[in-house]
Amino acid sequence: MSKQTDLFFIAVLPQKEIQQEVTAFKNEAAAQFNSRHALRSPPHITLIPPFRWPSSNLESLTQCLAHFRFDLSSFSITLKNFDSFPPRVIFVDVETEPLLVQLQEQLASTMEQSLGIKHKGPFGFHPHMTIAFRDLEQNTFPHAWEYFSKKVYQRTFEVQQLTLLVHRPSGWQENGTFPLAH
Image 1: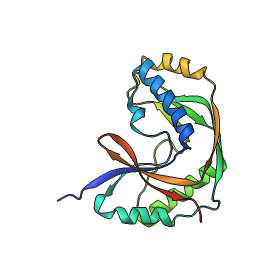
Image 2: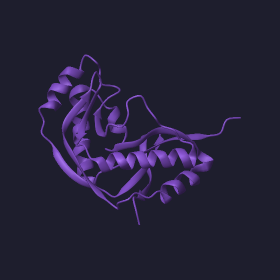
Image 3: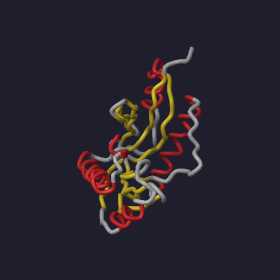
């Protein structure tokens, strides 16, 4: 008998105004290039990619995140223009920020030590906010990239908390926020 599990991931979400702006880019990708899959989650920077966790043990997951502490209570991240992972992914780029890398590494270590959640992927940590991916057709990608590569976008926001997201039939939903420090 298998245990019921849910699919989760942990991310940094920008303030609502920036979420609305990035969602507008996702809507442009959907309308002009038929790529709608990115609309199934709020704009975010993934720290821990999707993982399965027993539904009956949600409390241990949330307790781990509630007790996680970072050296700073906040730091700034700058979103600047667009970039891509050919042949399917277009995203709002995140300027290099060592504190974000440090946060991701500390969180990954805590998740592995405390809960046994290993997440090492083949591509490493490349912070970004996806606006088109999985359903962006490879033959459409060059046109979509040409369109977004010419756009100018820059915003800065404070990272003050982590967000746990859970997958539901309607898409990814917030399932709790956890401050970086007290």
